[in-house]
Length: 167
Image (tube, rainbow, N blue to C red; front, side, top):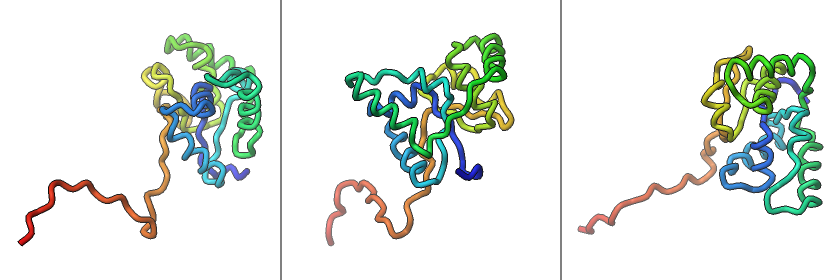
């Protein structure tokens, strides 16, 4: 895949909620379609490949099939969790007081120069957003940043109040 595509890292909770079809992950479907259309890449820590193990409301067999398919898609890019990443994890845990597993996703984004980490973990957002990395890693809830509707697409009608009296 061309390295020039925009990249965003999804943490395990984002992947789990997306695969489980959670309402709060609604923008993930649009992001997923952008990745499928080669408009961006979704990067995942190889650690997430073990952490994502169950999906609420699904049998283990169904969950495993969905999880396996997710990680095998060509627009999902695995990022290695190695010794350098592990050392950064320890540093982040000490400095920000976050859980090691959360620090692992942040450290992966830092190590691989991924400028955006999408998560539903508010503690990660509150404590580390924009404070680490080169470039600084923005940490936020998954958000579709796609293009505005083209002129050919109908725009939604504005809500109107009561009809004006006719003359």
